[in-house]
Image (cartoon, each protein chain N blue to C red):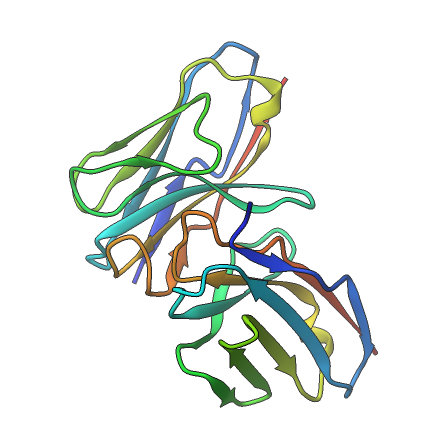
Length: 114
Length: 108
């Protein structure tokens, strides 16, 4: 019973490098989300996908792109990493379309940009 | 502006005491609220949800929703050291409405 699986768990990038964070869920959820969490800031939404084939910007989308590859997978890409993107990234999924049901979180990716 | 604000914390309580956490929200259309617990270095996990006005109890946890005053709260009775964590509240619109979290420390 995997739930929400995120890879990688840890990553160190140099400024300007690119990378893709992968997320997959096996709960047949419609909605998927990418958050970042910084000390004292709580969870801030980067992008979300209310259903397969749709994506929308959240609170802090600048510097990121996403792809909802299919119902199971939702990836987050950093095209040119910056030190300000050092954070813990969480992927989550939920049963409703855009909200109204509890979220299930992955274990997170700790990203450091030097 | 966040739709959900957590104003309390950090909170330190002795073992066995009641910990009280509060959130206020701005969107009167919000229908449901969720409380998540997050241990240090871990991901958030759901502990309570509430849809209706009033109280909802689950073991040592009680969630309270007051739609007229637009606040939602979480009470942890008989607090244990294992309750030491950050507690996040969220409304049903996840686009904007996660609170910043309240860190609870239970002193043995």
